[in-house]
Length: 288
Image (cartoon, rainbow, N blue to C red; front, side, top):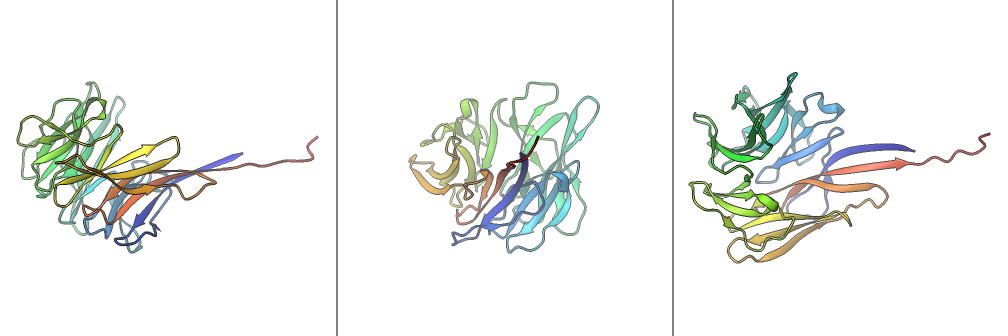
């Protein structure tokens, strides 16, 4: 028996139901999609991406991907001019992570951090002037918390307790969706104050996008037993829960699953990474 695995990207344009394959090399990991659904940000972490992984941008019309630099892709800037990435380097005793801006087009990359934090996730604020960062201090228990970094100067400032990490920033920049103990979702005020539990949530909900009007969020639910992923829209005021999309692997012969999924704020366009494992069995006859 032989075994083969790869990771690719599927994309669905606005108003269509037929998905397109936007895979590039052998181990693609989608990180973000532009608000108009015309550009995706991803990284390649397999043989094609090299030792430190490579960041790529690709137009959803199928144009060839471009490679602005190295690292793990995180997010596109609101003005479409920068890609947020995290670069990790290994020393004899630890892994050092650094948040880096890569230009989309001409320009030089910009390192944003140089500290003792293990950065895991970077998310833009809608104003394009601040970044939400999740990380934990080196040498401390791996309990994430969120920080805000002002691009005009200063160091990352913690805004959540340890164990509370932000996943989404509201369109007005005043709230973040956080994931806390037991994976419970809350609305955390950026200016300070008590978090508010999100009504209508279910165990296992994973936040993926905020609606353009700021009234709802999209969450995903994975059923590992039957390999189905569903996307719901939650009304933040009423707790109303509406099924918007169901993803079922199209290949019944191979093992496949939906991994990271990104969606435009209007919910009309999306892209996701799929993982596919294939196995070949051989029957040998006539051996003595």
